[in-house]
Length: 213
Image (cartoon, rainbow, N blue to C red):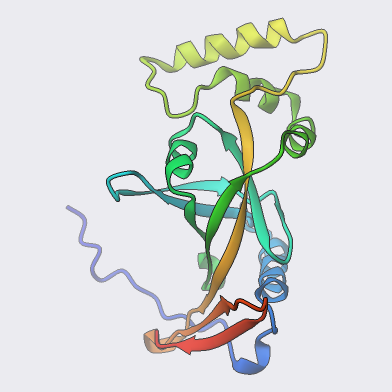
């Protein structure tokens, strides 16, 4: 076994002080997202989506953030996927942006609700054509015996849709995550990290508190 216990580094790139905070979380999130985009690192909009099944077992996976506003974040997926099945029973969700190379993390806690068909269709037809076909080919999270089955289905559908627009699959959709809590984490030396948590109040305002690392 590989001994991972000595693997560590000191976080010295930056800090997060009260003066850096914004009254609401999205402007600060947007500032950090821009820093990630400007860094030219891969997948700045990649986020870990965590859901829970009916037994209380959590599951996590990476998806891409595709839209956001002051109150919500949006992602798309197959509605037959494990995450979608879990959200149908328990819409509580956690989204984590693991921006390791900038020594930062941002976590959103909220509730997921399905997007309307027009909103899903608009995004679906903005995707590369082969990605649209791949959505038809994959019954996400179902068990398959070989990759060749998936590839064969993709080629079959590519031929089927070669002369026209790829229709929106009935089993493909998206979610809007309305968040009520956001935590910003900035790595610091000696594991004395900066953590600030935003909590949404009943009147629509946000409270901000520093958390111990």
